Length: 283
Image (cartoon, rainbow, N blue to C red; front, side, top):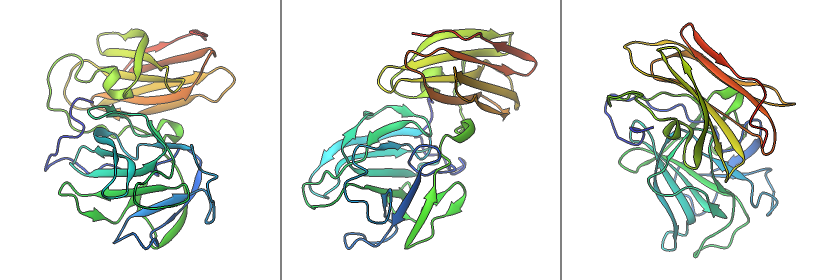
């Protein structure tokens, strides 16, 4: 998204989700002696050791990567920072691997790294150190799916990416047709595979990421004021269809699903114009 990451006084705060894939349950704690406030350490259970090493970490909200590096002075090790539409920042530290680079636009629920225990300052078991910050850098109480995190600790299930619910549609002052590119919507690493016109309303796109094995579908409106009904869906053969449907001004989606060497059915609609594919792109 071309404007994600630009601070705006009028932009609404994103609806953060737990930074792990849909349906996973994690235990968050703020009890570490190294913490000074509202930081959260996430593990799969309360006493997980290194069993979480290498598990997927995903973006809590769509945004732009403003830091992706190995840090020594603050003990973060491999750390990623993402700036969101209202200027707020989420931070993901001690990662085993970083999968996105500075400047990348990422979608909510997109994998950005692998959970780890990297640090030049501390010895630790594998976990994710997570923070939500204001635009000025102040660490604040975290919220997920519209509810405040229950400090000092909570067992919490992720809704991140469930039922295609990843579309927060920040305001876009840019002009042009379309106002967002499908690559910006789906995130770093996704390349176009196919597309279909939705009459004069816009285009639905199918993209694929070689790095993650994921397909992504988004229906992008060409122009027009106000909001319209829009839908994007993706169905991997043998799996449940994932759909994002609502009333949007710019696009529906992104919806993502892993489909390496598997046929997919995809499509979408804007207003009364729609497209439905057959099962295809099986390679």
